[in-house]
Length: 181
Figure: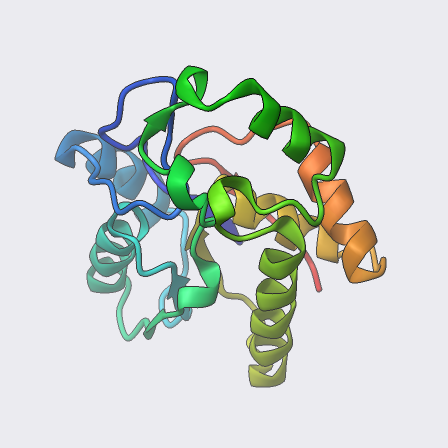
């Protein structure tokens, strides 16, 4: 089960991929309450190390008896480099256009490209599947969820990255998505 983090405390229109932004406690409690009654005990929880995910993961690990908590940096959102914490409107149009022209390989803000993110998530998924959990919770980010969902398709990594990069973003804060690998 993939869970997107609660709404972060960041102004609308700000690029905040890998930035460590906090979540208001009432937002975390809203997601925590909706999840804790529907999850079984003894289920492993994997989380991005970014606070907007980690705080929720720690709370859920306390709520679910004997649930193991695993922090894995490979679940972090994409690193937008120099674009981080800047208003999208302040990023030069030619840079946005360059990214749109090559969504897979372009490194926005000289940060991470989608292919590199797909590579690290494929490695995470490989390790997770080796653990042979029947069910696991992954608390992460919209970009991470889109890539993990695209990995189900069995495409090459470049095709997976392109599919995830061009898919419409419709993953709400606190949303849960079930995937089968």
